[in-house]
Each structure stands twice: as structure tokens, then as C-alpha cells.
Amino acid sequence: MARRGRPPVEITLTSTERRQLQSWARRHSSAQNLAMRCKIILLCEDPALTGGEIAAKVGCNPATVSKWRKRFGEHRLDGLIDEPRPGAARTIGDDVVEQIVIDTLESTPKDATHWSTRSMAERHGISRQTVSEIWRAFGLKPWEIDEFKISPDPQLVAKIRDIVGLYMNPPVNAAVFAVDEKPQIQALNRTAPMLPMMPTTNQRRSHDYKRNGTIDLFAALDIASGKVIHDLRPNHTSAQFIKFLNKINREVPDHLDVHVILDNLSTHKTPAVHKWLLRQRRFHFHFTPTYGSWMNLVERWFSALTTKKLQRSAQDSVNALAADIVEWVKHWNENPKPFIWHKTADEILERLGRYCAAVTNTEFNREPT
Image (tube, rainbow, N blue to C red; front, side, top):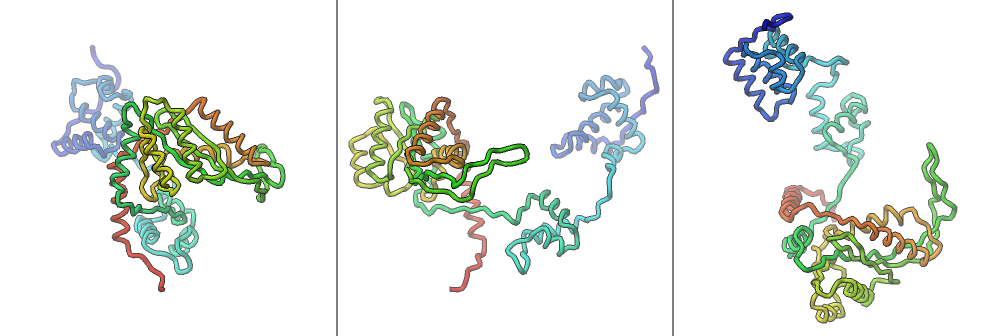
């Protein structure tokens, strides 16, 4: 059957063009659109293939095959590159962009510890909006600073591997709990009633408040199920901690071992606690590294309690605060969601190694004594 319509543009490739097209089509760093166009042109060299057959092989519309066949016939390899898009031409050269990035990373203004968009714009004679766009493109935020603390714990590596192992590969016939205290939770009430949220207006409250006492919350997060065993106490002494351990002991079936992840609070290491452990042989304590409480998953649960309940609640008494916490925990345990640990011990240690290398190679500006 004879073909209808205009005859397609004949494509005859030189050896150089064929090698270049094959390279662009295979290279992982090539844009998807460019790779597809190269495949189209390589197939167009075969006169036996129709536009529809090429489109089916590449996965595009036949009109797309016709478009790029024509563009290649007119402009060869240059025709496969996207034409400049409409819009105003760039007024900032690459050299200016590079210098702004270098200045942001390697220098500071005379009157400040970091650059602002206005001070950087004044330095280079451009608008602060342009500086803002450059910073956004390179992910630079001079006004922000992160904090970190490298643990001096001599057993750092062993403790990281121990705790991550409990999270990612828990022992058989055992319950694993992340345990900690949230001390001195304040029963606060605002000096004026809170105003409700309305369209265009946020919820509002007075900046001052009245303290109505404090209470301590003990919590044990079951790593497998996400359920929480809790207890409210007037303080977090060693005796109160032992009472909470007894509560965990009562609620966990007798045939299971109990692995408890704790931080290095002195309350957890008193002689009374050691004596209790000698009587309760199925309990095993695992301590986080010094300054490593971030490894205790119950801290994530405390964060949820704070942001979802305590941050905006108001109580006239400690009893009202306790009732609110008990109700929130009850609601949590009705549909618990375990927190999943994703980072392996090797990934944590590798990142820690990068921090140590960066700190070692950094020259600190020490104040004169």
C-alpha cells in the first residue's frame, strides 16, 4: 500500500553524527527529552520504518516523530536542542552568580556575622530579589545555623550498634521499650481566654500565663506496636523510676524478656536500681551514648504529645493537666503507630565521621582569655 501525504524527510547520518546520537541516547545524565529525540533520529535512518512504527517503538506521538525528523533535516544535531524560551534576557552573568556564592560561603560583612540579601545586593550592585533567587537556587541560608554535639562517650560505636540493632533487628521472645521521663510539665493557664481562629485571623492567646504546678511523666514506648505504658509522678527520683519499672514488669507477659533503652540520667543508675535489676533477671538495660538521647524513640513520642496537646492546652490545676495527659495517651493507644527507625549503624557512624573530619579541619576563632 502506497504511503499518503508528504514524503518524510530522508535522514542520512554521518559516522560522527551517529556516534553522538548514540552517546546522548545512552548517557544517564542526558535529559529524557533529548534522549528520546536521539532515538527517533536513529530509527528514522531506516527507510523501512514509518513514522507510526517509530512512534510505537519510542513511545510517543507520530507528530512528534515528524517534528524532530524535520528539525534534524534542517539543523542537524543543533536542531535537537531546545530553542531559547521566550522572556527577558539574563542581566546577571555567571561570573556574578559565582562571586555571590563565594562571598556568601567564604566571607562576612564588616558589621555582621553573616550576609543579608540587602547587604549582599549593595556589595554587588544588584537587587536583593536577585540575591534571594541565587541563594534559593544554591540552597544557601546564611541567617540559619544548625547545632550539633559530638559524643565523647568511649563506648559510642558499641552503643550505637547495640541500640540500632534493637530497633532494626529486635531479639526473639522479647519486648523492646524506649523509656524516658518528661519532667516538670507545667499546668499553665492564660491570663485571658483564647480567641478562636476565624477566616483571615489566627487563633490568639495572651503572651503571659499563670503557673499552676508541675508533674512528671514516665513513658515506655513499645517499639513493635507503638503502644505506650505511662505513669504520672510528682517527681522523677530513683524510687519513682523503680515504681515505673514495676508497672512495666506487671504489664509485660512473664515469658518475655524486656529490653529497655534509656539515657544516661543518674536516676537510672543508682544502687537501688542495680539491686532491682538483680531481682528482675529478664530486664536488660541499654544506654544511649552520652549526648545521644536523640537515639531514644520515646523522644519522638514526647514531641507528638507536646505539639498535639500540651503546647496549646490550658489547665487550672495539676489534676486537670494529669487528666488531659491520661486522655491523650488513651486515645494514642487506641490506634498506636510505631515509629520506624531507618538509619543503619554504619550510616550514622559514616555521617559522624564526616562531622569529625569537618571539625578537625576547621580553624576556630577563639576569644582571648
